[in-house]
Length: 408
Image 1 (cartoon, rainbow, N blue to C red):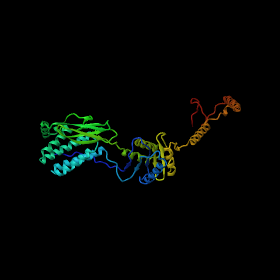
Image 2: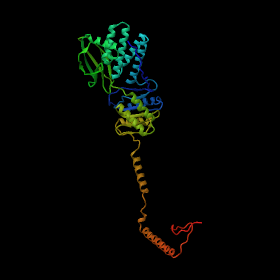
Image 3: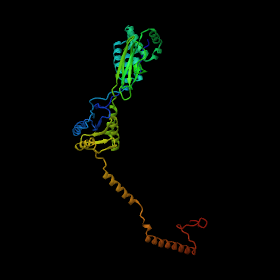
Image 4: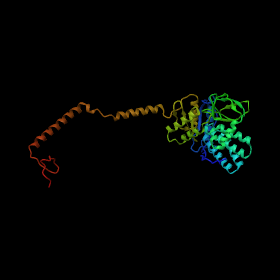
């Protein structure tokens, strides 16, 4: 067999903070409290005190969730791409150990990588990584002189990634040998919740219910759906048997998005950007009211009016939140009286900026006529007098180019 060379992979990154989110049904929470203190921990106690006070004041509308930032207690879970990056790192580590004839080290790396791959989303890259891991398992089994384990591993690898059969001549020979063996057939019956989940068998699209006949042996059955966490199950299908496979997909969390939205609130320079971040939190949490809590004050955002209230002392903020839960309109950031006063000032300023109509008065018209008559008479007299005098020239007088004397 040819040696296996490692491929470059990206190292996974770590999140800088964590979000602890209590579970609640969709659209069931009327109000969410968010700690937006700059240092994270300083607003946590205030948030809990305020939440308990509002809940006590409004037992008819219990609060079922809150967003609390605690740093650095934990980290948000890595995403599928990060998990697959770690899987590929372990795969390359296993390949390097195999090339050094360190079969124990290779086996350990493969076991860790397969466990991680089976725990993430059933993406095409996931099944490709599983195929490479199964191929390496087959190579190790051959060196350990375990043909049955090698056959099973290579069968899985070729099923998940058929192009491996053309990787080199030895793989092609092994694939043809496995194809010539009659292992028998079996089936699986797939049930998934939600019922609209997409299912696949060995990376190929399938349907819920009874599957088409499958070659007896190991198969990878998966289910996924947008808004839910996908799952992969390794299923052994005996010859002539029908194996039930069930999936109950949990709803996907949005911790990473909430971390970003909360950070945007903390870093907001003005009410407009702060309100937009509060709106994002409301959408992610599927709630109406969002209370932004700082160590000494809090502000209420209402998704129905798209209005962020002013930051108020905690006692006053508790009262505002309680009134909002009871259906009373919260105190706006700008009152109606302030809006009306601003409109009056704007109208007065507009009137003051308009030009005066004094020129329409009778006395102004008469005065203008007398002044205009005097100006016309003066100009006429000047023209007559000047026409009876010979022209004089100086540096300051104007003359036509044809009759101006040369300058000395």
